[in-house]
Image (cartoon, rainbow, N blue to C red; front, side):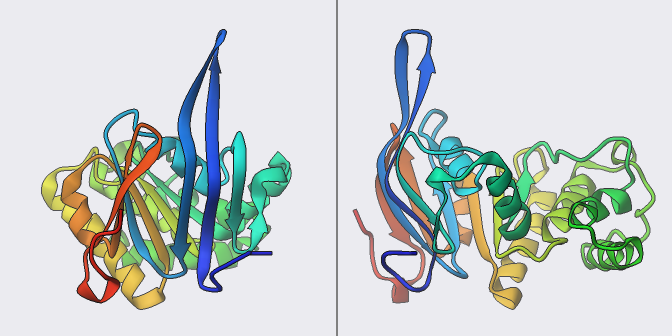
Length: 242
């Protein structure tokens, strides 16, 4: 079980990730310790090569650490097999990617229904839930369009709807505004902020764009695979932590 904070949804304890490149070992994360509270809005920021994408993959159960422990909802996932990790991902984590990752041959509605159907939700219920979510993001008139018939911003709204379909506890967004114009990017950030405020979702954004930092309650800056510093955006959270 979770060894410390009762309100922690994710904990990293001494986490290392080392990639083998031929005869050379390349550490992407170097002994990272981090606790993420349930219902927190967190940004993980850093330049290319800082280790933020690796951390995202570990937090999202897409990969396992080379050393250390990761607790997700009290479970130490470091020793889990892929089938167990896939079940955890499908139940607890909703992903939003920079490249949208929509299925090109499926309509917006079918893309949002997909994770529900993977969980054996009946078609009628899945359709109703998907329609509700697409209406929520302003795409009620575009539900039968393929991704190729949608703008980048519309595709990202479909992706967010898909991420919310199974009502996950955690929304993990990788550069969610990276391929969008500034106005559309602001809409996406506003929507994620509203989800956080209304539904107490844990929102984690991984980015190199410091413009996104102002949205977070807390910002974790990575450099060379280590936490360089942690900053809080609200006075009641304290000052800067090093």
